[in-house]
Length: 229
Image (cartoon, rainbow, N blue to C red):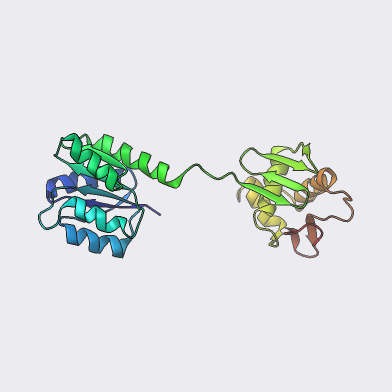
């Protein structure tokens, strides 16, 4: 879903310009031309970021930002013709995340929007699944069992990740084939069974009595959400 950006400026030409470039970059733009309108839209639409002009006809942009900051930490990029250092400092101290002075390059504004959103989201969290003594790193494609790294083929890892990301869900062999090869790939159920056998040999303390990858007779396979469950 496209992220919403509330663009507030009393000059329709600027709003249209910013809207065109942001929408081209994949954002959904909510335009506003007055301070109170911006506050109303902020409460109703809950945008991911606000581009806010300081010179508005009904309420000063600083006042609008102050009202928003009472209730939200949504990123704000100030947009203004003011060039005085004191105004920039005041905006940043109020809680603005960035400051763009008119006239501006719309491509630069798009880049700043992206950068501010990245900072707001923070670094991506590592996707690591841990079940008992089994650790699956979905980003580095590494698997560890009882502190020992387990070497898996790319296909074996993809099969394990498909099962482990939805513990307890029963996958048919056909669903696992689709996940591994795509719907247009023709292969037999035996292929999945062979990969499961290899995974159990590498991961299970007792492959004949598996703790992690369990057979659901007549259906397919599932990953145990808890070791030994």
